Image 1 (cartoon, protein in one colour):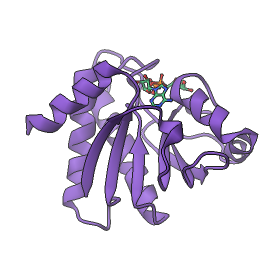
Image 2 (cartoon, rainbow, N blue to C red):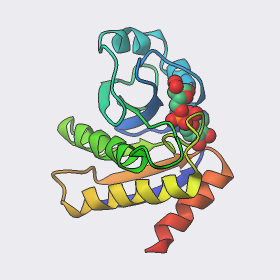
Image 3 (cartoon, rainbow, N blue to C red):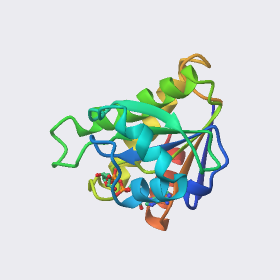
Image 4 (spheres, rainbow, N blue to C red):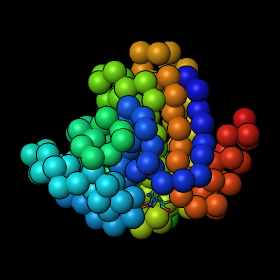
Amino acid sequence: MRIEIVRGDITTQEVDAVVNAANSSLLGGGGVDGAIHRAAGPSLLAECRTLGGCPTGEARITGGYDLPARHVIHTVGPVWRGGDHDEASLLASCYTSSMALAREHGCEVVAFPAISCGVYGYPLAAAAEASVGAVRLSGEKGPIECPAIVRWVLFDRACFEAWQTALTAR
Ligand code: APR
């Protein structure tokens, strides 16, 4: 599995699946959730309405509709509450659940945003470390568990630098 990081807008990614940092209702919101729904069009919300929500740490898959991506994988990150409420394991679970779902649907190239690093307030360095660690661990399990390429699409410079540091740290 190859890991890439780029700066940019995840809604423009021509990949098998883009991952959405959603909330548990799966009925849209601001941030990257809002951007993905705006770009995908109303059919995405219509499909999300049939899913009945999603618990924190889990993932659900839909079509990509007007996005260049074939699928959207919606995952719900933890809200940062100081770090002793299982935030790191819940965040890691967002990545492993999303990658397992991607594999089940034959998605070879998956783009992730910095889950929980906006409204949910997760500190960037801690988020990058937990996220990179989870993706690398899945990658070590071999092609059954993970896509061929995982690409982080980071909207702002601070996020990009945090992921760069985490990727070069080990
Ligand atoms: N492409 C890539 N990344 C983006 C984009 C975009 N178009 N727009 C925002 N981001 C980045 C933010 O800069 C942040 O680094 O996505 C990261 C996650 O931020 P949020 O979108 O706020 O997501 P999160 O912190 O997980 O909070 C989720 O926010 O939008 C609501 O419905 C959503 O309630 C949920 C909550």
